[in-house]
Image (cartoon, rainbow, N blue to C red):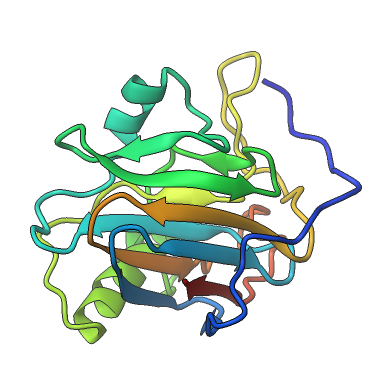
Length: 213
C-alpha cells in the first residue's frame, strides 16, 4: 500500500452548535465520559497532529476498544466511515459516522512510550502517549487496568508493498475531523502524540480538539 496522497478538499460537518470544544494540549491527553448515543468529534486543528484514541467501557474498564479484534471484525486494517469498532469482547463500542480524512488512520502501531524514545536516542525523559493515557484517565477519575493498543487518528503509516511500515509525514489538512458515535457508555481518551523525532506529526507536536454532543 503506497503512501496516501494529499487531498485538496474537505467538508466541515458533524458538529453541534451547543457542543463545547475541548483542547487537547500538544504532548498531552484528555479523557471524558461519553453516554451511549452521543457523538465524539475530534478535530485535527492544525492538520499535522496524530491523536491516539482509546475507548473503554465506562462500567467495566476491563472491556475496551481493541485494535486486534477490530481488524478481525472489519477484515481490514483501515477503518472507514460507517465501520463499527469493537471491544476485546467483540461488542460494538463506537461507530465512525463521518471522516473527512477518508480512512487516513492506523490500527497497527503501539502507543509511543519512554522505551520507544530511548531507542530513538533520547537520554532524558520524553513525553509519550502511554504516560499520557494513564495520567489523563486518573485525572478524569478513572482507573484502567491496562493500556489497550490505540486507534491512531491521522497517522500515515500504511503497510507498503514490500511489507514495511514507515513513519510517513501527515497527509491530513487543517480542520480534518472524525465523528464517532458511542455504542455504549464509555470513556474516551485522546492523546496529542508527542512524537517529534520521526515525521508522523510533521516533527512538531501540536494541539487538537474534541467535542461531545
